[in-house]
Length: 363
Image (cartoon, rainbow, N blue to C red; front, side, top):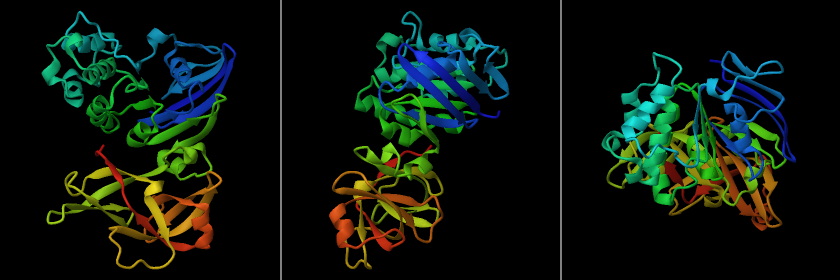
């Protein structure tokens, strides 16, 4: 499969949409932008529920829409997960899942019932009614049903927005398994960027005017401090790290990212497995000279690659970790006064003092 190529142009009421993007053939692509920028409309265009005349959509080798052809919604092999689960209350969980299989357009399903039940952790729920499930459990069933319809593309429109924090934490590990276990592309829309940081590999950033502002690998866009992502309340860098060692005496794990090493409390998984590490810019301070006698465990040599003023008194600094590959990037949020006091410049060698980091589960 050659991925997804899309162009949607037209007006929805008074709102002009003019979008063009490509997506990789598998993995999670986050769709992010301000409220009202057209994210849900884009999903509806892909699903065939909204038709804009000046549009084009190719999924793999198949053209679903162009100037002469429009594949209707009921013929598009798309799985659509909404904010509300929309399960059939008169059917059991198992029968809701089987309904997905009945909607499949193939007699030889690539996504089978039992593996889907395993993937979404549904074995204990199969005989229950949706009315007896929690919000997170209902959404897991809805995702399973969408997968069993054998989609070539899975659309997820803010699937966690109706859930409380505990329910979100319950379902996120299941969502993390999707891109690893599935061979189809997933588009994930959320107004909570921490969800996208945790789940997505690729990102499409939409402006409030309904246009693509930037698109590419998630870590590449996080490192572009000229983008609006840098002006969010909590800018951060997401690193894919490998567990290298666990020290039981101190309950500390050593992580490797491109040759750079971090120490993080706890034992999150087996040696050799990968994790996502989220490092907030506000937790990274800069030291000009070599540090001495610090209680901070992670103090790493780095070089200043770029800087951007995010307010009258704050600077966002992009750092490359020395001795590591190009994926080892950090962001540091410091005051303009600190920048001037330390006489910092692009290209300077500094030490990044990392006061804290949040660990996401392995995908």
